[in-house]
Amino acid sequence: MSEQKQKLEFGGVPGNLAMIIGLPLFTAYLFFAVRFNDGAVLPGANADWEGFQAAMMPTGRAAIIYGVWFVFQALLQRYAPGREVLGAELPDGGRLPYRMNGLVSLLVTFIAVAVLHWSGVFSIRELYDQFGALISVMTIFSFAFSIFLYWYGKQHGQARHLSGKFIHDFWMGTGHNPRVPPGREGLDLKIFCEARPGLIFWVLINTSFAYVQYEAYGFVSTSMILVWIFQMFYIVDYFWNEEAILTTMDIKHENFGYMLVFGDLVWVPMTYSLQAHYLIDRVHSLPWWGAVLIVLTNMLGLYIFRAVNLQKHKFRGDPENVRIWGKKAEYMQTEQGGKLLLSGFWGWSRHFNYVGDILMALSWSLPCLFGSALPYFYPIYFAILLIHRERRDHNFCSKKYGADWTRYCDRVPYRIIPGIY
Image (tube, rainbow, N blue to C red; front, side):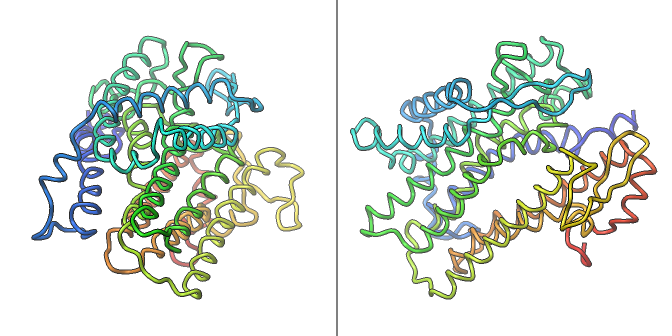
């Protein structure tokens, strides 16, 4: 029994249950703090609890908006033009096909929303007006979808790494690559949710917040523009390098359950848009030199993130011939058969790409200045998430590579920041 408990991640059943309940509540609290508590972290004397409760009530309009949105994105994923690539090798030696059409889907989505907005069928402002109701509707959908996935994974023989405990398996998932309908040609639910409904919805919500600010003040602030551009560019870059997602820990190793469902569908769009939400009614003058420094921080972060991951991607494609920084790539051959890269950024630390992530996250918050700690929730949370993810990856690789991983860690002793951590 003790061995079984050691395998249960994220605090075991009590921790899983706490996050299943706590994540939706925390998402709602961030909404309360930014719109009904004057952007303060802790509830103040003038907090509008009644307004918050009314805003959180699910509405038919919110259900229609999200239902249409989810189906539309699924149709784009399935039918929009794009090249097909093969994913990582599965335990049975096979590789599943994936269609890389994220940029086309993003473009078609913005054109469709613009047409609906200017025709009067749908106003982009509705994403602001229905924000609380959308959180509730999306949360309800996430629970229902996760129950379906729990059943579907077991029904179609995908269940793996199961604990036998419902709460843990509901949280982590029972299916690894659930496709509807089952088979190679079905819609891959995990890659779809990871890459489409939440990410594209996030930039649409930012657009809604910028539009609401324009309606209220007659202009869009420099800070709002910076946040919109930074986060939009992040999404465009993500889809430009869409194939790289197939090598991420989520896609290669995680089952698809409530943890990823809620994270992909609710947490990303409804919390990552916090900075733009905060800036709607907080219009301040950002000095030109401050804007330049923030832009440089973002560009440095994006460069580090992309360059580090590109080195790994090229190495995996041709480990014997790839050159990094003008030299043939050095690596460690493991008894398990894998190759551990030692050249370039991967010789500096085991996850130097996370430095880029943290710099980008910080640049998204700096335009909000320092009137409240609330806009800095994302970089703080993200740093904690990355440290936790690095620890999980370390444990996974330690089990996979054994003594070879110990030797690798001796060669590359730093986890994320060279010389510090």
